[in-house]
Length: 392
Image 1 (tube, rainbow, N blue to C red):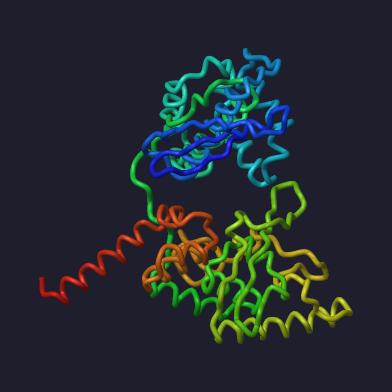
Image 2 (spheres, one colour):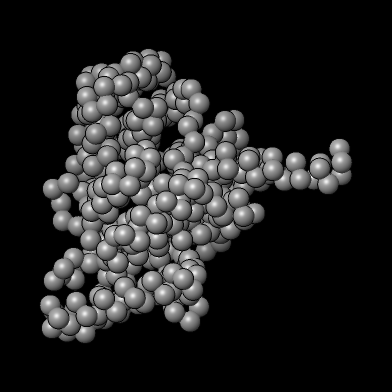
């Protein structure tokens, strides 16, 4: 595929044309493109990749493969699920995509790919917002609608790359409706109550939840930790795995969600004391019930009598029980502890690059997008301090 180079507000697409019969390099072909305004970083990246594919096809005058240009969205989606998706997506992602596919196929599946127009998608999203969820009894969340759009864009981008389409008709057809809600975050008083509640739980659950509060790691990342990932001297943890459990499938231990997810986080002396106490308990249980010594390759949070990690949903269920037992806000969840960690970092004056690195976000822009409210509050507080200091 053509290489993509940033040039100010534009991007340069470069296609290498190889060498001539005398071994001299043929001058590469270039094209400058300007992404449409209003795209998120992820949308811009996807748009650029599509432009690179089209430009390379144009430069090399690649003949279109013999594909059925009259194929319907339903038939192509069937092909995509069978031949393309399994090699590109994690099982957990594919499971979510199947839910989105079940939503759009009954409405859009009969259209031929070449017949799809932006208004088809805009009308579909408008109707989707009126659908009542069987689980909540309320209209589908905007997050659900956004997910359906993302899945459609992914499938149609692959169709374009495969020669079934000349462009992606779903591009820029979705606009977030209403105001984005703030992440569910525990305030300091609630956080203290959560910590007190955890100290009444078993050492395993206390350690797990406090570790997420202290480091902001994802629940699957915490399940994927092994004792050898801890550097006691530096009081750091190397996060390099993620645990995923898809309904009907065996537990999966894979690489972190993104390349940036492979990172180091740090913990306090108090957290070190709790981890070492839990390690002693795990060593005793391993020797007593498994008849062996605890190894560095053992998962910190593992199933009894097995070498497999515990599933993230176990901790999700347990945390809900803890909240209910102690009269804590039921809207909170395990991921709220990660958001709380991030908000505390921001309130403490950490810059966006530092927060992004500790959370494992691939782009600081992702951190800004998720925690806009927290950064805005920090800027407001800093501005107020400055004005009071200058008596303005």
